[in-house]
Image (cartoon, rainbow, N blue to C red; front, side, top):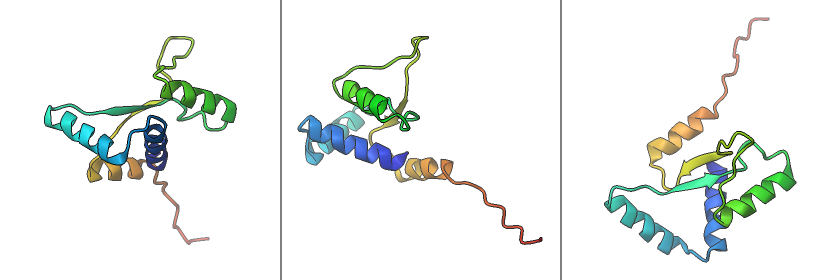
Length: 104
């Protein structure tokens, strides 16, 4: 998920003409005021349907929030700037245990 968040942030920044420096400066200003920016990632969990994924990403880039039939928000919210501990925690969530028992 972390790689997707980075790619999504870059695509949104490029689409909105927001450069890396401007984005980082804006995030710094929020941080100094005790605020955090988050990204809306609607297509997390929907990557198997390309048409749906692209439609969701397009509309979210235009500022839309996407809900399901029960008016529940679809997708995930991700922090725009994560600390190294938060990045490590996200990566640990993707780890899978492997049985190393060699007894046959």
